[in-house]
Image (cartoon, rainbow, N blue to C red; front, side):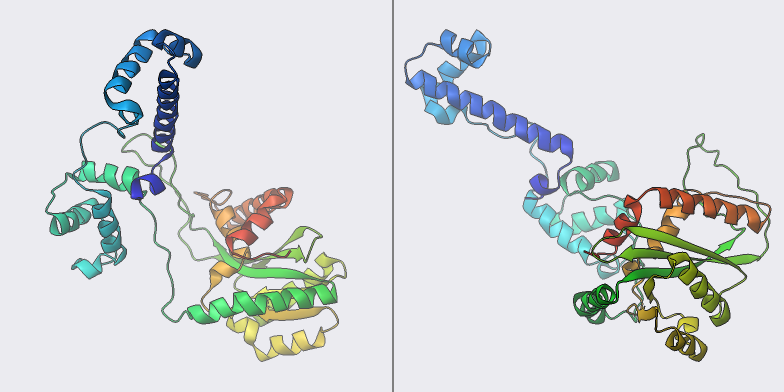
Length: 353
């Protein structure tokens, strides 16, 4: 049922408490059936004599069934669990399927759907409680997906290609390097923060388009060996030449270890010059492609999300040097937390075991 499956912790604890109290009353019924007097039952079960006497009276009139829980008290809800099942299915179709513009559910729109389906009118404040407490819903930010995305190809990659990549890296005694690039600019990464009501903070920053590029590589040992974090900064945007330089720096960082670099389909990754360079580095380097339009499969994406939610959040600097310095601080923090790279890997649904 929706209420039991998705109820918050307080409702689950209340249900457990009702079950515990019912078990104690049924134990009292067994003692009454054995001829034990209410006062003695109260002593054995650690309850008041008044409660034991009240249970005894109920037991005499209705037996053990009279002492069973009648469920949570209160007014019967206007929407049954079956109604909520149907509502969840309707909302799952998306707002546009119900005649609204855009895939955005507001309380007012949901109230209209409830009234259409059940004839029950709810104030939006009451509807919020139903969504949160009985259905386990919350306000969430949608995840964007490209229309060109091929789900079957992605599943095929996870099921077939990823085990092949791991097996090949294990055979070569190479590290799997999850590689990704990102940009740094003077435009702050705006995140929510505490402030007086109605007085949001103001982030003052230079409004220019100066940019730098950063690259990270999560270097995982297959079947053990831990994970190290490679970081590279390049002024301007990455191209084939600068990415080749980054790969050379990666080789130095790995200290002679072989590598299987896993990255996306960026044009510079697929260029003729890059292919020639990779072919010339076969003694230590193998490059593998992620499936198209599936950035969530790259754990390195989570490095950027982590930095942008911490050191780079609401950061307003006079120059790119301040942004890059903050990024280095974040990299040092991630390097010092051995569990984070594996949390990023689990978030991607992958394992190097």
